[in-house]
Image 1 (cartoon, rainbow, N blue to C red):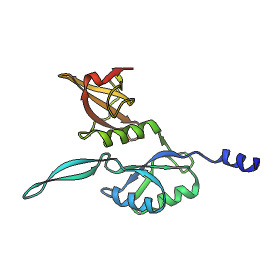
Image 2: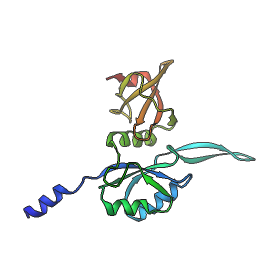
Image 3: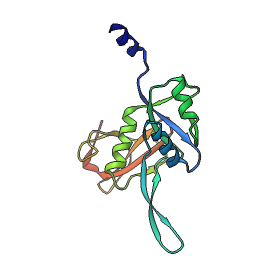
Image 4: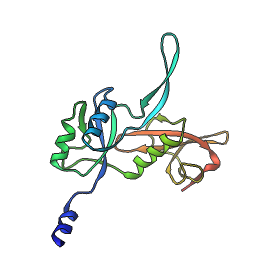
Length: 178
């Protein structure tokens, strides 16, 4: 029994990683990796799109060309993912030096796209006041304020590895400086 426990302790823990996909292949890669039983997250937002005769609302990836995948790094797992049609690569140098995305950043993006109907991507930023949301369904998330206008705060969470950010506008009273 102690041998089994010792072997489990040596196994790498599951972490989130960013997978770079070919252009406009995010949904295809998502489907193929789900079939391989991987836990993944493809953040998307509803965006208006103009057609010849009308406007339609489409689901678009929040970070075009990327999705998040949770797994324990191993050579076999890396090969299984990298050989999936539509995958360019997993961000990192090799299978044993991949760059994980912090759980807090993935969870913050997940909560924003789930509960904030007007989420949008913004340029990657690291400046501004660091704040925590204190009210509403996003309470507890930490990020930065991009702007304060007319009693509203533009709250930004950055995914450092991708150098991408997502923003949502909130009532200024719903945030506090950290």
